[in-house]
Amino acid sequence: MLSGAYIFVAFVYLVVAASFLATTGMLAYEFWDAGWVDLLAIDSHLFVFFPTFGIVALVAFYLPSVAFVDHYWRHVPFGIARFLVGIAVVLAASHFIAQFLLASDNRPIWDIKPAVLIADRGEPAGCITAAGGGSCARMPVLPAVANLRALSQRRIGLSEFVRDCKTDNLIEQRPVDSRKRFCVATTPLSPAPELIDDAQCCRAQEALVSTIETLYRAPANRSMTGRVHALLLPAKIFFFLVLLSISLLLTWRFKEIAKHYARRMTHIEIGLIIGTVATLFFPLMSQAFLLSLSVLAGDAGQGTFSIMVPTLSIVFGIWTFLIIVYFFRSNGQSTELLTKIGSAAAGGIALVKYDEIVAVMVRLIGSGANWLFLTALAAAAMLMAFIAMRAMAQGDQRPIGVARDSEPVGEEPRGLKFPEVPKPAATQTDADR
Image (cartoon, rainbow, N blue to C red; front, side):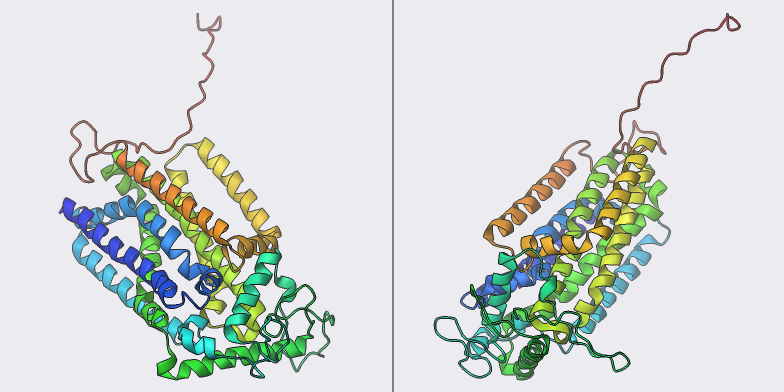
């Protein structure tokens, strides 16, 4: 049963990791000659996060997951039945959430076959010259994507290129900023591009989204990347739901976990910390994606996932808070104080400098990411995975659940603790003498 917990978790996580690699691999294979790096960078929350930091989170959460499975199999009343019911619920939730996301009318560009996208010539047809100049009522889809990427690499911050295309018949419509600006959907980026007003840019963005939707309606136009993504999306949602469930368990059943797995608590803690840091890249990349999409397609391009991004950021913040609470409970007061101060400072900076943080994310790990940044991102992920694996390999090598003949039940977990400051020796008074 104990070895079964290790094998079960390893098998499930290997399948999930393979799904992460398959989606990105299919994009690279299918769109190799159609700007696959542009598509990868814009949708970095999907094509970059999962094959890098997603796999890091799987490695980091491996030992906590084994403790999760073993605890339910051996120490919880009716644990196996409850565990199987929980897995069934998570699998069902993963499927329904995936279907909900896939039902959106707004389709990603990579849902269309590369040949179909390459054949698109914009509106009016041939509006982009061979030298890359000209201006369109709507640029061809792939050149518009390359246009966005070029703009993102030239500047830090794209919010000033987001157009307000919404109308409210209860409020007089007065443009906040009537200046003409560069529009990704109409004009190729050049040293002196034509500047476009909001109304014309909004029409171009709506036409771009409409073109993608029209092309997608024909089943023959749909890409293999989109089909693979639809097939494997439940695995990605399953990944997040499982990690969230483990985090909840370790905070809720902390005393029981600490009693049964005291010698491995340090390794469990390190895994939780590394895994949580790795998963935080997902909301950051999602926010970068949302800003890039707003510049490319405006309000017309927002689908179900785009609307969910702010909520997801809040959920990930709560998730991080749960791990901090768990970390507090297994460490001394000095650690708690320092972590509280650090968390408050980080939260304050994030609130005050939110726009600047998202702007940097777009440049580094979003649509503006170049090969240097992407390589550095992969190297950081490999380093984090190596640290997580080293943490599991060091210390007590006995499998989880093996009886501890020299360790009394209920011994305090050997967690990450700051050294205690020695107290000055007490001096005797005359009364003591």
